[in-house]
Amino acid sequence: MDKTTKQILKKIIASENQTVVSSGIDNPFSDIAPISAVNASIDYLVKNGYIYIDEGLTTQFSVAYRVLHPFQHYLKSLIAYLLQNWIAIVALIISIIALLKQ
Image (tube, rainbow, N blue to C red; front, side, top):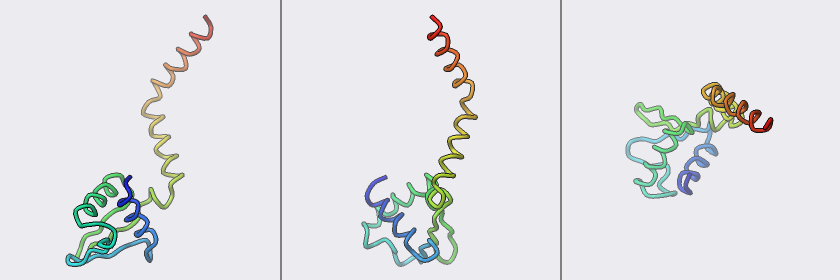
């Protein structure tokens, strides 16, 4: 995560209700970086689950669950990883035991 992205995320977290509202004309992050860098940073944050965007008459940038509860998100992703790779983990343990018995 680069400097611009961190600044945008901090601004959203620090705002009221952890939501930044934008209309089509104004750019609430114009004090941070040019519009192209802001758009790239927002795309990164949405793609990686840090924020979500609610588009209507105005656009709302809101903090996602991943930012509000980082430990729970980490634990959930760790459990998903272990469930996905349990066969490889068991094979690793068996091979380590076989090497230690020699």
